[in-house]
Length: 479
Image 1 (cartoon, rainbow, N blue to C red):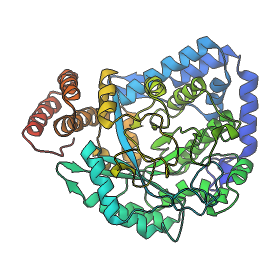
Image 2 (image 1 turned 120 degrees about the vertical axis):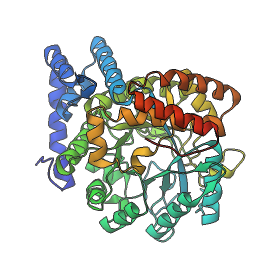
Image 3 (image 1 turned 180 degrees about the vertical axis):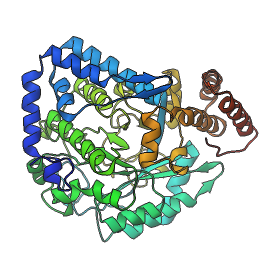
Image 4 (image 1 turned 90 degrees about the vertical axis):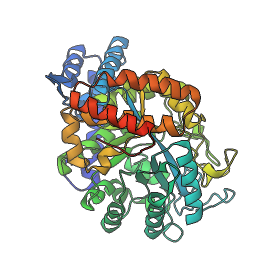
């Protein structure tokens, strides 16, 4: 029986509730009067400089997802843009994944790391190799990483992950430093989540892959990941272990997208109901080609238009969450969905173990094909020319503005007072230390323009002073 406050996976992601919701959505997909009410419910409410959004329930959002009316779709896109602008402005946070090991004991049929794949080279970074990878990432200009690892209790125990985190934070190369390490590793115990929290991680990210229990068990035939409940309840254990910020995601293409979208929102509602804080981020990856994996074997693939609609409705339904799109997707598609709700992108990603120290992009240990293969400077340049502020900010995490403290600032729009100047500060650092001449030129013009948008005179004066100090060689300021 459906109960969003339950701690049992099959009750807060109740299969019958998902089916009931999809049936309700199908019956009301042409009910334009209801649809207008749903859209009105989701609109930002302004009180002076403060902004509030109610978001949408999984039921209401599913009605919008089912609606195929082109005029309604235009309204959905327009509303998503309005909400994105209200809470995130023009800022786009940039990060990179760092693959530590592709040893894995699971049998996931959509991932080339599955244990039966005998022709993929298995590799695990030593601490010296971790250091080399981090220096390569720092030399590009990265400040935020998401570490990735296969599930293997012998080769990749929690002690190894913790040692890697310690190594990553310890490396200061030239003006480089990794200031936030997010972690995307397999579901684990409360005690291990406590250890990750003590190690100073940012967000704990875990993709559900699919919320349909029957499909989940079929797609994960062997290994510890086969346990649907243990995997689905991981975020509750992470929060019990003290991790404030968690990131959800499904792998679109494994199951029907309407089912996944509804269940994903149910999971977000569960976290809000139980912990008072919804997901810090939501990722929207799609099944991609990789060694030993043909995405055409999965018959639930979605086209680019459907993908864009998923992003827009995620932004409307969960207005405060960060939405992440990776280099799995092309430059063209990333460009489209940035407007519709995406707030974080990866740049210059390599999805192979040890890939950043290789001159040529290695493909033999890649987890998936990378569509957007531009350098970090090219991504930053592109974002600026698209009218965005590339941000390498990690200030909220380092100032303790996480979990409910972050959300309370975000939900009133006050986070803008920190995020906007911090984005300009970290962009300035990138321009001084890593940018090409053209990127430095257009970045400087952007910063000069954006300074004038700061209403608070004290903030503007402090920001101007900090930017000057960065010119003079100082680093690592934050609001």
